[in-house]
Amino acid sequence: MMNIKANLEQLKERIPEHVELVAVSKTKPAHMVRELFEAGHLDFGENKVQELVEKQQELPGEIRWHMIGHLQSNKVKYIAPFVHLVHGVDSLKLLRVLDKEGRKNERQINCLLQMHIAKETAKFGLSEEELETILASEEFRKMEFVKVRGLMGMATFTDNSEVVREEFRNLKRIFEKLKSVHFRSQPGFSVLSMGMSDDYQLAIEEGSNMIRVGSLVFGPRETT
Ligand SMILES: *Cc1c(COP(=O)(O)O)cnc(C)c1O
Image (cartoon, rainbow, N blue to C red; front, side):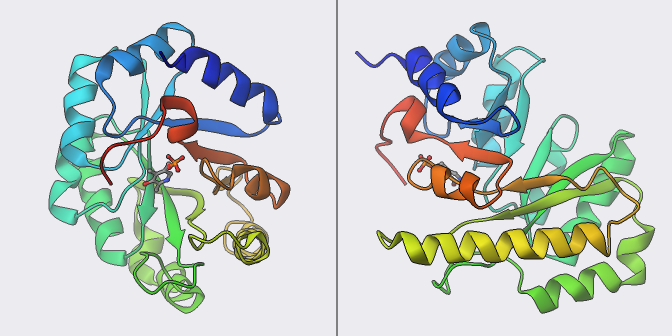
């Protein structure tokens, strides 16, 4: 039998203290999340709204839920009351809806802008140009109920670690640029979410301070 608590402990020993670990529980049953929560872990990630909402309802309210998958605007309302951090924001339209739902729920919704750093065209995310356009827009600057806390990215799915490293390095460069220019007066812009089970070590070497790890903790998934 797999010991997910031991997996988590081992992983935590291998990552520096300044790196936050989001345990990605997608497709895994709620009792596994509860087991890690009872062992003291608070941050969990899901990529589907329905599954996220179901687990949130079933599990303790102290859990910090991260929405790591692509989020459709029409589903924001289901997670707006409780979500801790939305990782995959890649349009002004989605920011607009998050702002609106944040206002309705009288809370600020924290999010990360997802950058397109991989070679594959299929992956979601913004280009640097699209990012600049959003940040420069009057509409974005007026938003009060959505807070951009940093950036997120996914590297190309490849065994070539040099390709992956280069992509992470590029994301870190963009992150640093934003930190020193657009978000200079906002210390809350501080999260760089990059790295998964297969590439978290590379990601940390290249400056990640938040990793999203699923299979290494919970074991392989049957679907996805
Ligand atoms: C599934 C998923 C992860 C975790 O993947 P593992 O390879 O199992 O660690 C991380 N980030 C996102 C966006 C995911 O969808």
